Image 1: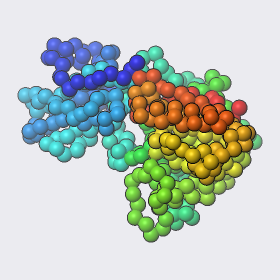
Image 2: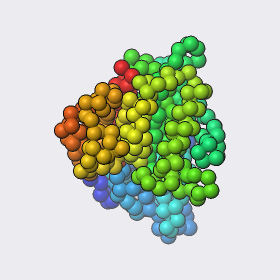
Image 3: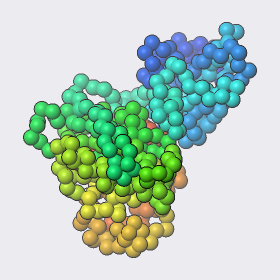
Image 4: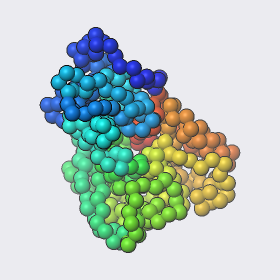
Length: 386
């Protein structure tokens, strides 16, 4: 199990010196930056120079993360440099920022990632013995930026589209498509910047574990024309959520099918998403089974005690018909995100009573964080389009 209880006690001076001597700059650092540093036992050392500050703290992104529940007080050195070394962190990617006399400050040593509704710092803590999401000496696909005009929102929108390694060489081949959605407070860059989805697919395809496929990733927020935008939503019923559904159905899918060499039918179209994106996936796919045959929900807030005859427009009312139409209904959660894992299991048990089969994968030792969702994709993608 990777998940650990993290205390806010700082390491002693001797332990800190030892950690610093055998640590390495985090892979997520900007070029040439020495901090944050990750030690072999996965402790992470953070530094910021703020000589005029009275108090500096490290704030991890939320409670459900691999660095612990902050904020954590940092210690000031004689030169005005503030330092903190964490206890061993959970492997994977973690958002964080500094609180300098209460003000939010990003770390100039870290690359910037869009999360929590804004640009945030992030630290990558490598997982020992795992390279499923690493850059390897295999053929690589491309991540393309595609701007297109949405009739639904009457505005330009940006999608990130991954094409498999052979796409530009095999010009007569058409490919299935996985529409892959981010979580609340993130955007269309999340699955490649934080989730490493392109490298995960590169490696799976190279090993013959997954079919070559296109990934289409869009920002999960949309509002009708003339409506003030909001940062995120997790349910159906307000303008933003329903507008995004229309963007996917009426703008995004037609654009992808018209622009790329796709197999443009439901048997070759999948959708999955994490957290908010997983909830959006279930809403969109289950109420439009004429367009999707493969469905994935990663760490999503699921409805409990649902009425199978009415939920999602009655998609589950006829278990035999549903099972014939849907080739894969897949749920994932981390073992440390107890509430979401329990709701997923309850949903699966309810579906089973109606004769509907589904798959449930639990990422060992992780919570509501990117290593959970990277592992989800690594498990989910090989099952698609078989």
